[in-house]
Length: 224
Length: 195
Image (cartoon, rainbow over all chains, first blue to last red; front, side, top):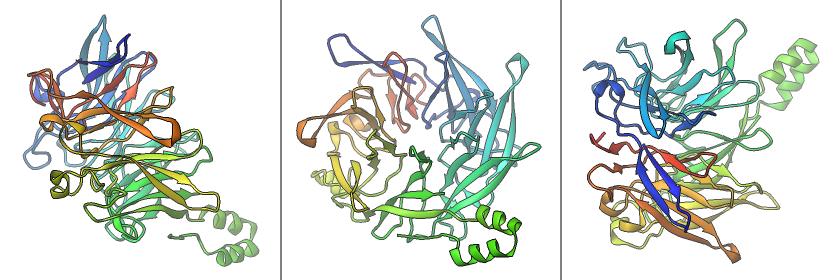
């Protein structure tokens, strides 16, 4: 994890603040963008390392971590290690978001799930997994609207196996209800690997890695 | 263009049947997707190809993003490898539709190439991002500054692996600013343990 700070006379100085990998248990390969909380701590996901099973996750199932700055030294706390149960999310490589209650949400590349990590007393975080029905391989992470609905993409799955855009709405009594907003079919884009963006009117925007009229990917808009 | 709207005639029929059906009909209204821009699949596509990252808006409603491949970086290495990628802007047009402006064609080697991450604005309107290729194939952090006449000045503000042996390598993710204006990111490889 690195920091670039602006020098007084212009120019930037880079400093490596933390190196992953001193222990496999603490996560390898943090591919996802980081998330900052109001106290200046950084949160992210490492797609490998953590718990290991040669069938379920040959590079480790991945972890969610927190990097805490204490008097200038950055230390890592592993908040959650994805399990080798075969039903958990595995290998998260998208960014994380907080809700207003302090839960952390993200998506996993394998297991095609959305995970919700809830902080408990004593620094323990518990996980609730919501299946992303029909979708496979989510690298997008999530965005959240004012009503608490979560939006993301999967790069495969769906009716045409070209990926989907999904919405997960908080359900009465807990859990989430999924609505698939878009099934990619190639012509309208294929294989979205990135997260979504809202405009100021609440329309959703995203990119697809492939597909579209010219075959080299698209920028798309979804209007409610 | 792809229109996936729930047929309005059917929605109207539901509305006529009962008030409940009307509500159900409205809730069941599917989303409408519009493809704003299609990238060409050619490795040397002028507009880039294979966007791999989240887009962002400026305050005027223009879209900014990156493509991992394509573009006209000009080097033979770029042409061989499927293009070095671009930074693009999509500008909404008065009569509808969007036009693409390529703000930078990555040029391989020290210039950086093949970005997989999105962009972030600072308070002054400069754009920042990362690319996985660069000097020693370690990745870079770049800045794009707007200039008079709609041009953008591209500069590499940091090349990874330059603080051997413990520097980061392969910055896949996008960057974030803290409130003091420092940029933070993670690299998938490198560091003390290479991971």
